[in-house]
Image 1 (cartoon, rainbow, N blue to C red):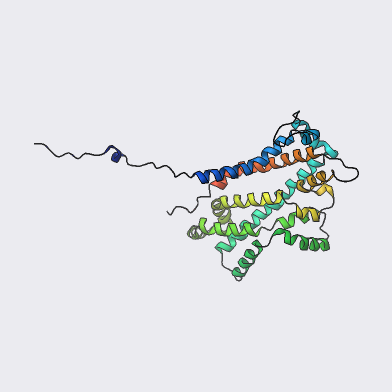
Image 2 (tube, rainbow, N blue to C red):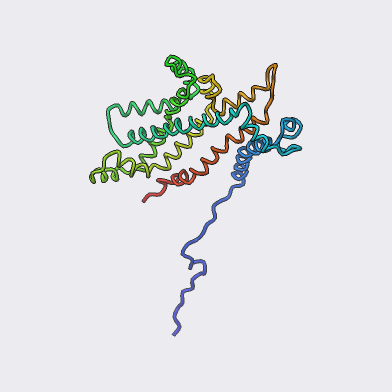
Length: 299
């Protein structure tokens, strides 16, 4: 007696099928253009930081000069004008640590409070925050200068730190991230266990908000590090300049009667100035990337 046997196709035995993601030639070319747009300025900055003052004008911008003067340029950058570059670098670090760090802390506390607590005037506060996001910082620079001049705070570090403490976009970002990442049921369970609001915030909520906090920190750090217009109108003493204003002052030395062009030091100083930002991004990107897919899968 012959039984009917069921023939199974070899491909049907595979429990899972691996599908390759679709490829787009146009999208690949577009991303290559974006990559070139991002990398070419960095390559130009590094290549020209290796040149002497004479080689900057006698060679092509993306080609190395006759001599490799990178280390000599770095040494001259840190020693020129009694080492004022180190002072500018320290000032920038101060503004970033105190200003950007304080802005991240305040944005986290305020955004968390708006998302998880109900209080009178909450809608009005949120409307003010949304309105502040739409106002560019340069539009507030002159009124801030007039206010700080009446308070006697101009030409001091506080004239840079205090405005940097306010980050409406960071507050909004934390508010949105808190709604999706911090379950209200988890907070209620912690309250039933007798935990105070501050303990619940620092032991539970901060861990859940870490990717959002790091994102706000990256935005505020970059904004404070690249801040130029506000220090330009607030500060007149070079000892309080950040790197942005200080390097522009060096670049301006090429104009005038007693011109002393030091473009090689300006380029080298710019190259050194981006190294801390790159290091911060490399260190914090693992926390940032861990939150990009938060809420994308329903559990």
